Amino acid sequence: MLVKKNKISFVNMFLVLLLWAGCKKKQEMLDAGGYKQWVEKTANGLVSAKEVGDFEFAVMYKPIDYIVSMETAGKNIAADSIRKRMNELKGFQYYTLRIKSLKDNEFLRTGLHADNEYYERLEYFVSNAQSDIILVEGTDTIPCGMYHFERNYGISPYNNIILSFPEHDSLNAKDKIFIYDDKILGTGKVALRLSADELKELPKLDI
Image 1 (spheres, helix red, strand yellow):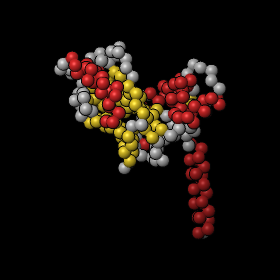
Image 2 (image 1 turned 90 degrees about the horizontal axis):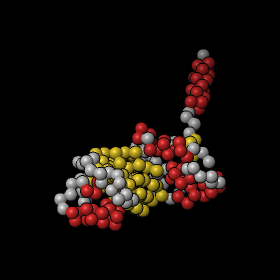
Image 3 (image 1 turned 60 degrees about the vertical axis):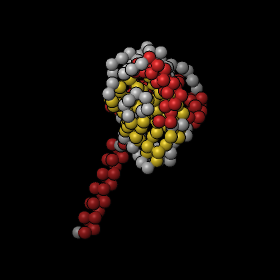
Image 4 (image 1 turned 120 degrees about the horizontal axis):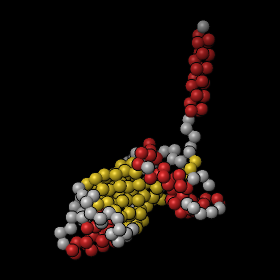
């Protein structure tokens, strides 16, 4: 009787494992345009945003597949060249920080008290803000490795800052807390969290 019961338990366990394997989500493959849309959709968890005073801060995690999809969209590029580019990008993790004014056409002009403050802000974001940006993963504090402030000359209420951080062995194992310790806008320290669970099993670029 005991042997029969054990056999039934083993069969049930096998069926459960078989069902789990059949239901396990297959990694999604997307073309360049579809990959761009997927990453930028807030509901997919690669974008975190917060309003502080008259500003909105948003950080977007950019998988290597996303960067390559942006570079190759609409172009006829050989698969070998795409794979080569992906290998070139390895070793770092990539982000875009967007700072947006909630009340003006240019965030650098929001809350100014004097004209010269505009140029002080511009100088800060072009040359000095990099040291005020870090990424925290568990007990690791990672300094910003690459920084580029994209100027738009007042044509929109936001500016993008392109960033990269050295990749750690624990990539995607822990939540990522992006910290911008503001020194010029008056917002104080801004922290944005990206969940490790959302960064697992990301789609792959179909090449």
